[in-house]
Image (cartoon, rainbow, N blue to C red):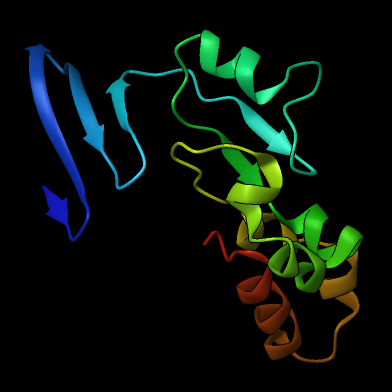
Length: 125
């Protein structure tokens, strides 16, 4: 299975279980994998170097909080989420899931306003 710049290779199977490699433009991730979650651009209690030392090459970034503070515009001015977090490896984001259930979006009169904020927050450069 592949999409431009991304590929998954199965390296071993045992019944329904499998091990593989997820190849991205920024990292090769051996699977199965433990994926730390970074909320507000940080994995609590660990620096990017400490996370990297564990062998992790992927962090799930929840960018919804960055959209609120310091704002998506400021993160973009500072070089995007990857530079802001100082994480050179794979960095998928989960802003749409969180923001679609946020109180601000629930109060919104249109889904377009939430969608626009979400698409801005997801930029990973």
